[in-house]
Structures are given as C-alpha cells and as structure tokens.
Length: 359
Image 1 (tube, helix red, strand yellow):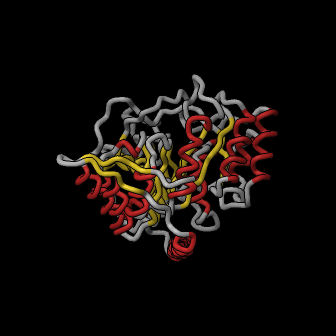
Image 2: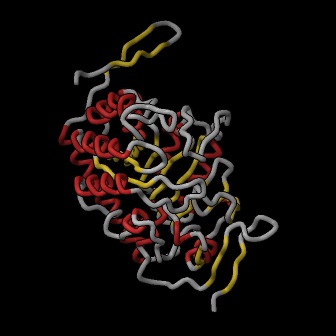
Image 3: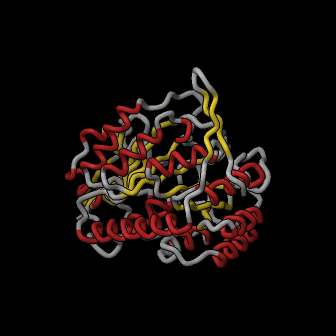
C-alpha cells in the first residue's frame, strides 16, 4: 500500500503530513523488546502476589457504535479529564500494576489519549488498548506508535454489518490494512461466536487477520452479566476450526474457553480485585466489567492490603464466568493460595457484596 497522507490545518497555512511506515528491522526490535518486558512482568507476578498484574481503565464511556449485546457504553458521556486520568494511572503504578489496558466505550474518542498511553509507559507498565477501530487513520496510528502503545485488540463480530453489530470486516478491512502497514505495536483481532452473529463469519475474520500478519483469537459472547452461554452445534464447529487455525496461545492451554463452549462451569480461583482490576470512568475499582459496583471503591484509596484480601476471596459468580482476561490473569496463580473467604456480589440489601469466611 502506498504511504497515505493526513491534512493538518493551521491558522496560516494548510500542510500535508506524510506518514511513513517503520522499517522491518525497527519493528522486529520493538517486538523483541516488548516480549522481554512481558516475560519480566510474568516473572514479577510469579515472585510476588501483592500487586495487580492487569488493570482495565476507562477514560471514555461514550462510544460511536451501539452493538446490541454490549453493556459497556453510552452515547452521551464526556471524556474523563486528562489530569484525573494521569492521577489514576499513577495510582495503578503505585500498586505495581504490570499491564494497563485502556478500554471503553471507545477510547479513541478521548482527545488526550496519547498522553494517557505515554503515562502508562512512564510507570513501567505494558500499555494496551481495546478499540472498535473505526477512528484509525495512518496519522492516528503513528501517534499511537510515538505514545508507546504495546498492544491493540479489535473485536470484529461479523463480515457484513447488521442489527446486532456494526463492527464488521466490510467496514474495518481498510483499517486493518492501515494497521498492517503502519502499526509498530502488536495487533490482535478477536472474532466471536454466539449472540446472534453468523457463525461462519468468525472463520472468515480469523483467516483475514492471520493473512495480514496479526494474531487472532476467538471468544464466546456472554450474556448481560458476563455469564456462560454454551455454543450450538454450528457455532461449536466454527469455534473448533478457528482454534485449529491459530497458534497455541496462553488463552488456549488453560481450558476455560473449552468448558464454556461445552456449556460446563469452570473450577478456578478468580483473582479479580487482586491480580485484575477494572477501573470505571468514575475512578472506582470493580471486579470486572460485568460486576461493576463490587467492591466499587475509589482507586485513590486502594491499597496493597486490598489487593491481598481480594486475592484470597472466592467470587460466587466465577463458575460460569466468561471474562477471558480475568481467567488468563488468574491462571498465573492457579497452583497456589487457596481462597479462604467467599463473596457473593449483590447479595445484600444495601447492594454491597456479602463476605463470609470459609472454614
């Protein structure tokens, strides 16, 4: 693809900025450095359980799309002021968070997103982002490169847009081509089955992603509370084909998705609130995107003692959970620290979780 240009207006003159892709050697060097940092973060997690491994943080609840299965957006919210976002990133750094991923809503709508990414890198954390990809252009990708973004994930739900989702391959394919040419960061394309999307579309999306040099994963769309929805026969066949296409990854050897596809609960130790934090646009800590409100306390006051307590707390929603990022983070510690207390989100009349000691 030829280099593309992006117009830049100034009060006196209109100039054209040419965006040039990085060389292959530069990309390879960045990929090696990124991998070494990732290995270091895993080593740190194995050495100590007193810090979060991953946090998802929301700078923007508003989204430019309205996918019918999604409960994580609105169409009116303002962006979180950048100074407040930087303070929240610093709090995550204070806790020793290894990976900070920006999600939404649609994070690319935030006008100071580059500053937020740069601040994540300044803490020493790995910087990730989940986006629908609609707002990507070569100049925007270059800015993400300069800010230090490490990982980007785009979920593509179907080949043609429909009433369920507009995150379609038809609409986003040119954006994927731009990423293949200009992005210095790792790109993962996630296809989905379930939720009313045509099953065969997941296979087409995955093949296109791999053809462009991206990694590819497949997920199962959960219900409105993040709980299990087993696959039908056609969905399961497509899911198997996609998994056979993709290389073995961290998400494949822990067998969580296998049980979900078969409609079976998982027996695991959820470390949400400890190893994994979800920070909403109001700056509150939650277990995950589907358990917002629990514990629902300000990040500014969250301490290492809170991380250690939640690490040892069993969550009643975990057997039928489909939140793969929490599965994968928790799997780091699957072999140690049996949980000694139990919590049932939303079980009390005041809307707070009920905590009981397990004897």
